[in-house]
Length: 72
Image (cartoon, rainbow, N blue to C red):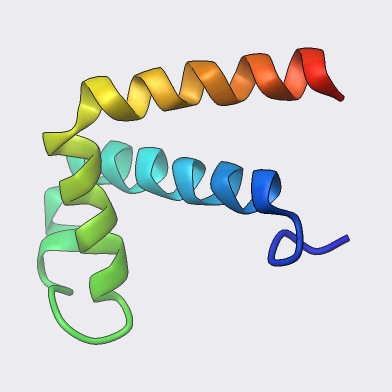
């Protein structure tokens, strides 16, 4: 089943996207900073969310990990 039709899988993909973009921006900021507009601007926005809301994103990742491990 596609992640679009399964809400838990969609949340997992979004969390992984946020964490990945924040990690890439920490390693090589020039890759994401130059794409603030357009379709690639989504990656910049995800990186900003990951940087500014990192305690909340980390908490969501832990909750998602436990739900994937113990509910399925």
